[in-house]
Image (cartoon, helix red, strand yellow):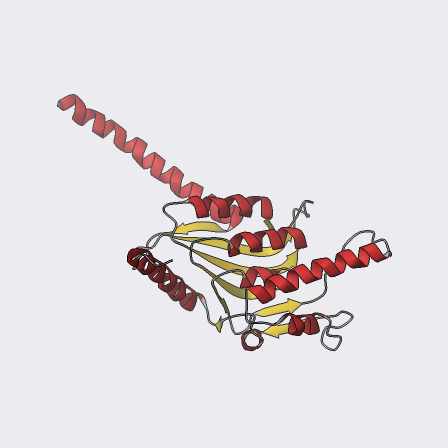
Length: 249
């Protein structure tokens, strides 16, 4: 009996050390990837916060001075979330200038295929390939000053001026437009019109939508901030649990 009590006393410092290590690991995860589990809420829901910021990095590494979201980090995390028994919902915060088209679209497709309730919140901006990311969730918000930029696909490096090159660009743009239209209230024709607009962006094609305008165009569901985003996510989780309890699909 006494030896057991002594053992418990000896284990206490170890447990404290493990707790400190877990807290440090959580802090490091936020610093490195902007990802964290949220568990201490009034609804007792286990949420996952995923931030997509800066430039979306593809197969090539960007400069170390650039703020980036690495798709090779995000995709495994989304797979883990989908397979998790604990995570009940996902909040995605966006402030991105866009980036690699294929990688951004891959992330958007994966978010859209999650079975867990998802909500996105556009803070600052969600430009270019950030638009499909913003609309990939079950419900979306944008802050009043948030911006979304729709413009044609651009390609860095050497571009061969041949018909197959132009066909490839058109095919890629069509994929993006179809995804956006399929996951929002915006129409493909209107999206293409905004994409090819010549009267708004200096020395470029495209359209800037600010706050309420993104809602009016059918891209975003609602103007709101972090409070509204959390309330909506909790609501979606409660509705999903209710459907599962009643046996509805």
